[in-house]
Length: 510
Image (cartoon, rainbow, N blue to C red; front, side, top):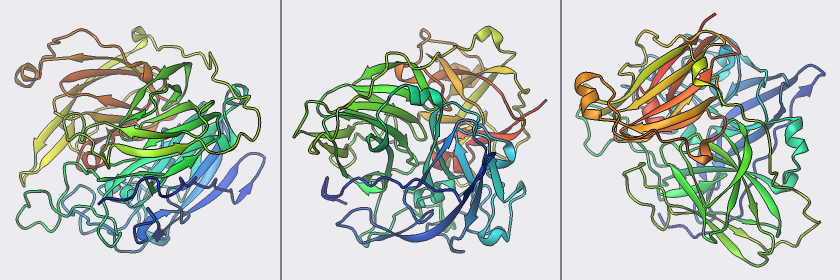
């Protein structure tokens, strides 16, 4: 579908106000409902799902170490907005079609409040998944300043619930951030990137069958979903009027499958100051940045001396990544900045030369090394199925790190896709990537490296919770497990993969 570019202004998600605030904690309630939303002025309004009747959901802002409680309330219809596949794990006909559980992505959180995929609940908390523990979640926010996000995580329908609209920003702030004198207030803007496809009546399109339908199946999981329309904060190809000064943009890729490689058509540098888990040690000037699904980055863009200019943010990542179709006139355009607002005050914000110390975790401190494969198989119907360590979701738990222990994980990608691998609870550091002989590994289970160690890209040199595991490479990450024990998950954040078995539980033990 062709829609006019830069016809609508970029919306900014509202900040969620707490129900009440005490000295020792803050309490929120968040309703999930169905409502109408305008994705573009040329489209009829679209029925979507969202938090607090907002698409994206309202931004939750907290302080580091601030204890907050959130009651997530499901007030959605009993019938799903999109086609459910009842052959997918956790989505069988003997459980409610519509169920939700919220995960704050990147949070340092007790497992009972992490949004475990089988801890789902229905409207009015009438039915629960087998791991449901509490109606009010507790977040201790034991993280440095960073950009997190919250989204649905219900087993077997995460791809549908997030695509329907259940996602929003969650920002943690601290004293160090305030001291850096970064652009703030109206000069600090969250940017949620997504892709969608629309039917002619404006409704959301999601495929019911793969290209080769499986006889006897009403609906089928698809290997991935690639939309033909790019959205920013729930608006297709918006524009943003800016002053000739510095702005801070918090970018999030909240797509199901699509990767973004972001550039500015002006060719000017963007200054990256943070990764998933917070500030980098030093900012870097970059011409482009890759964002896999669920990855975040913090960028400062400087529009000083660009009065009257129009600057377009573009995307040239193939989809699916890395060997899919190239971006076209629709998927290669993201949004436009118009430097048309007058400068309201002198810009005294900074691009700091130094932000925080980034202590590298020493490999020698690791007490355990795990070798974990990323596999591409076929299911009983002849459909593609992706697995972690060649195990399905319900297989016995095999990853059981000890509290406060450090581990190195070798992510051995035997598939043709790049997989954004996400671990709950912990932030990690990327050690390196290295090409290896896939055929030899498949035959002999031996890793035979065929090239040198490739250090992490400059854009990845910081705390991460999601990493690109590239095809025919071994990606190594290192992390310390804690500060909580309990049941968590790790998975591919391509939601179609996550929903169809590419997710595994792990348990942190004492």
